[in-house]
Image 1 (tube, rainbow, N blue to C red):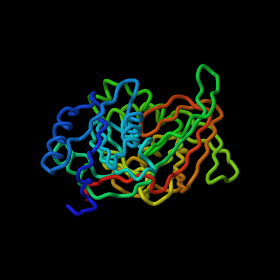
Image 2 (tube, helix red, strand yellow):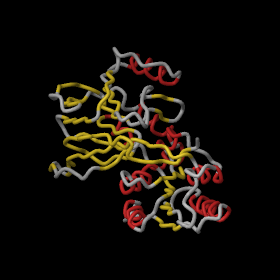
Image 3 (cartoon, rainbow, N blue to C red):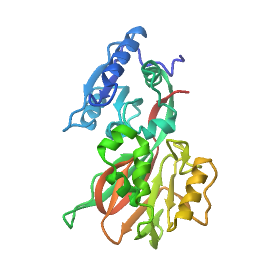
Image 4 (tube, rainbow, N blue to C red):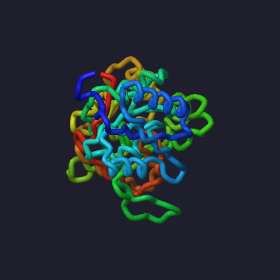
Length: 316
């Protein structure tokens, strides 16, 4: 362990843990044991609740002078903690305890070994990582609300039928099948009518398009080895944008095969671009998701990148 990798001696590590997540109790025990073995103070552990899902706990840790915060839970819990930690210079360790753990998957941090998980979160190499931020106008019972405060996403945001796919995935199937449940639900949405919207990239004039979905990514892979954005990197200071104007089963089959075999998807079938900001305005209220968690129907969404906004302890 190099000096830059070791947590500060005498300064406790703070942890924000979702007690409902699988293996949460085991992860907490492993964290406490690892701190004791390394001669560190006992970690200060704050648990999330249904009302306070991570942001308030992480904000308290930062306010109390935390230099290293460990988060244990799924992508939603990680995002809530990132909302408080991003831009502060506080190091973030991740204990991937949720169903999908997409951010941890892209960082190479997913493991079932609790000791390895904790070792990476405490002593892994610090890596600057970009953060995506999204703000939208929610639509509730036909009424358009005021723009929300910026909310982070770490892997990708999606507007359109892919968000509808996530929304249609039952909690029971998600618990039993994990990421496979999204694929099974998605198969039922493939041939739905494309959505009409206006899209502006990097403040350029908006253009009209019809698409199955618009995806904006900070990183590019999902489980099963599928690379949605082969060139996306978590530290390149850019977002990767994808439009999906597909209509036939044959088109979908070729795209799925390319993703599974790590080949580049054909530009004629899909439209890729890179951006620092994206503004999408659908003709009708459309579902939006952040890292697989649906926020509801929206009238529009504005997305930006915060380059190097987060320092994550990785396994390298």
